[in-house]
Length: 475
Image 1 (cartoon, rainbow, N blue to C red):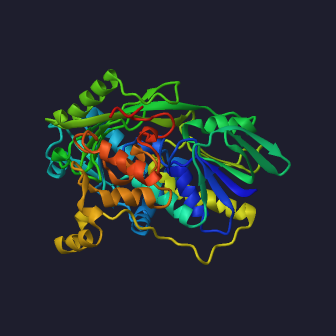
Image 2: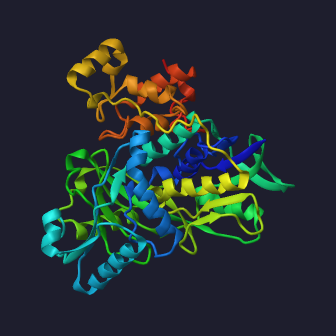
C-alpha cells in the first residue's frame, strides 16, 4: 500500500518524484519502458525556454518562467550541465515585426527578465551566420540549453536515493477506485495507493479517461530533428527561432550542451503514439526552413536524425490537478513544449498538492545533491593520471568519438537506477552518440553489460524488451 504512485518516469514524473522525496512518504514510480527517460523526454530540443511564448496567465507560462528560474540551483545540486546561452527569435520580413513586439510584451507580462528587441545590425553582431534577410529579433538572455537525459536521470536518481521506489517494464492496464484508494492493475500485478499522479506523457489521456467522465485527448505531434557534428557546434551560439506559426515555435537551430548543433523540429499531428521514425519529407522540410534562418547551414555534417513525439492537448495547455469527479487522482498531463523547462516547477507544484492533501512532513535527512558520472576529460592531466593509476578502467577508452572510458560505463551500470541496455549506457555516458554512431563501441559496451549484468550476449538489448542485438554465437 502506497501513499502515492507516480505513473511515468519521464522528466515530469521524475521531477515530481524528486520533490515528493523531500517528505516522509511511501511512494513509487512505475514506468512501462525499461528505463528512465524513454519517451518524449529523450527526444526534444534540449532547451530551457525563457518563457515569452506561452499565453499570459496560462499554466504553461507560469510553470515555464518558474522552472527557468530554478535551473541554476538545480544544475548545481544535481551536477548536470546547463548553460544560459540565450535565445533569439528572428524576424525575416518587415510585415512580421509586430509579432516580435507581441512576443516581447507577452514575455514582460509573463515575468521574463532582460528581454530586448534588437535591430538588424545588433542581431548580426551577436550571430554573424544568420540570414542576411533578418530585420530584427527578440533577445532573451535567460534562455538556456541542457541535456534532457542527464536532467531526467539526475532527478530520478536523487528521488531514488531519498526513498522513492522505481518499477520498470510495468504497463498500466486499468485504474479502479476502491473506497478511498486506487487499485492500479498492471502486467506485473496490482499497486494500491491513496493517490495517483498521472505523468504518463502521450498516454496520460488514456489513464485520465479511466477514472474521469471529463475526457481529455492527447494527440502525438511528431517532430523530426537533425543532429550535426561537433566540428560545427559553434556555428551559432544562441538558440535561434523564427516568429511562431500555427504549430508553435517552428524550426530552431541551436548549439547543444555537449557541443553539437541541433536543427528541428517539424510539427506533424499523427495518431500512432509509437511512430517515432523520421520521414524524408520531414527532414527536407526542416532543412529548408533552417536554411532560411542561417546562411550556409553546414547540413552535410549531419551525424544522425531522429524524431520525438510531443503530448499535444487539444486546448494547448498543461493539465495539472484533480478532476472534479476523481479525487485522489492528480493529472500532470498535456506536458508538451515548454515541458522540459517547466518540469522543475511542475514537480514542486504537484508535490505541494500532495503534501497538503496527505499532511506530509519534511524529512530531516533529505539529500538534495547528487554527483553525476565522473568525466575524466574535465580533470587535469595530473589528476587523470592519478585516477587511471588507481582505477585502470578509466584508461580504457570504449567510445572513441566521445572519449568514454570503461570506468564511466561501469559507473553508469552500477549507480542508482543503473543502465541495463545499450541505450541506457548511451544516455548516461554518450557512448555511441558520436560521429560513428556506435559503430566502434557497441560490441565493447555489450561485453561490459553482459559481464556486469551476468547475462549472455544474446540477452543484451538496445533498449529493453525484445530489442536484442545478436541471436546466437557463431564461433
